[in-house]
Image 1 (tube, rainbow, N blue to C red):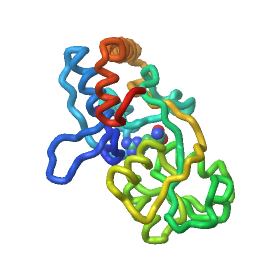
Image 2: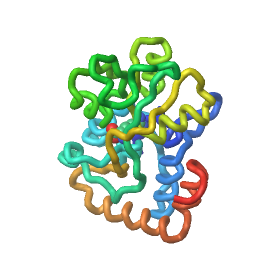
Image 3: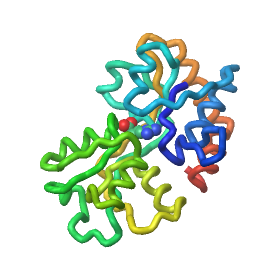
Image 4: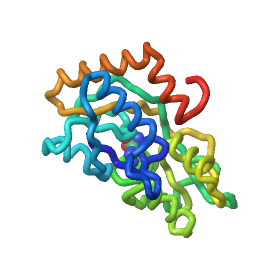
Length: 220
Ligand code: ARG
C-alpha cells in the first residue's frame, strides 16, 4: 500500500515513532485483516502515488485521495470512505482574504498533484505555489511567502487545533465537497470488489465507527 505520510490525521508519523499512524492507516490495516492480508505501507510523495501503482510497485493507494474523473482514467476507486472538502488557512491577522473570491492577486500554497492545486488554478488570477507537503505550505504561510494555503478541511482543522498552532486560522467557507476513495490498478476489479466488501463489513460491524471516533471524535 502506498501513502503520502504527510497528512495528519489521515497518515502521519510522530517524531521518534516507527509506525505510520492515522485514520487511513487504521482503516487499511483493518481492511487487510478482513481480507486475510497483512498490510505493508510505503511512504511515497503524493504526486508519485499513481505512477508508483502504474509501475506495479504498489497494489493499493490510501492517501486521503479524492475520487475524481481525471484519476478514474488511470485507476479504480473503492466506494467512498470519507467526506471531505477544501478550505483555506490564512494568517490570524489577515484582513484582505475572507473568502475564496479574495484570493485573486494573492500568492497561495498548495500540495503538488492535489485537488487543491487544480481548484486554485481554476479560480484564475491567483499565483499558485505548488509544494511537496502541506507542512511546507504552512511554513511558507507563516514565513509570509504566501498569503493563504488551500488544503483538505480535516487536515487544516487538525493542524490548527491539535498541534496548537497559533498565528494562523482556518476559514469556514468550503471551495469543494470531495469524497476519499482507496485506489487500485485500472484492471484490478477483483481487488476492488474485495476491498469494497471489507469496507462494507467494517461499516456494518462498528469497526469503521470506532476508527472514525478515534481520529475525529463523536459520531459520524
Ligand atoms: N484530497 C486531496 C487530493 O486527493 C489531497 C490528498 C493529499 N493526500 C496526502 N496524503 N498528502 O488531491
